[in-house]
Image 1 (spheres, rainbow, N blue to C red):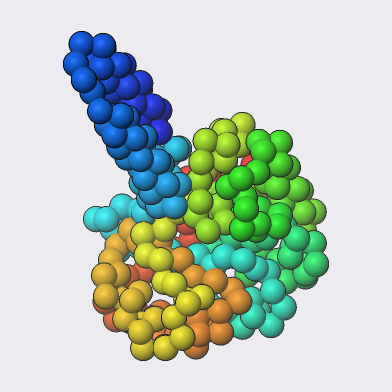
Image 2: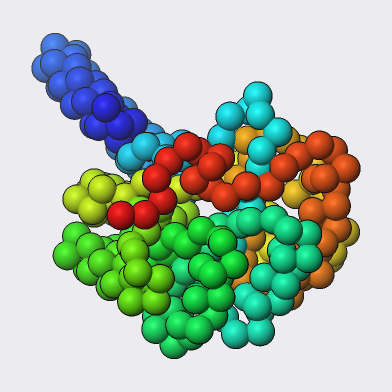
Length: 257
């Protein structure tokens, strides 16, 4: 049972208790307001913190006893940017995972083909990467996922099972769409904030300060600073006995259908 369902049950129980108490005692209305405020705060937290697994199960880390870690890149494919990342990965002979936006796959299929042919994993990151995805209808969310899978299949001949929601936002509707499509929801254990941090040293330290076996690192194709820091990050991991693998190996999950 998801945390969201458990919360709803708890809310009903507490609300019923409040009503019963209110019948026999002078129960101030502020208690009702407080109960609903707490409920809203918990739901907002669960929506934005993917690793909380509040609405649906999430794979956000691998086996902590292993020395394997996974690099993941969101928001591609993009000419030049994604290709430069591929060059760095090829230089160090490591594999990574790319969560792709369907619209960009349609625009730059040749870049996606390069990603696939070089042995990297490809995941679904919706078709439009809309900032209001969390307010979309079930029909729209399902369409976003299916259209992206269709575009990817046209290029690589198979459809991803791994899905990462835009901005890491989930809710009951997105959870339902994931369930209907039998996707595996993928999160992260290290969020680099490479789209916000502008200092190379700060980005490097944010990623490496707690880097350990089982970690899934969230990065972005379009971030220039990521491309600059990537070689140093790879070298650090190698020096500390860590091995880069694709998500399917880290999680022991089938990535395509």
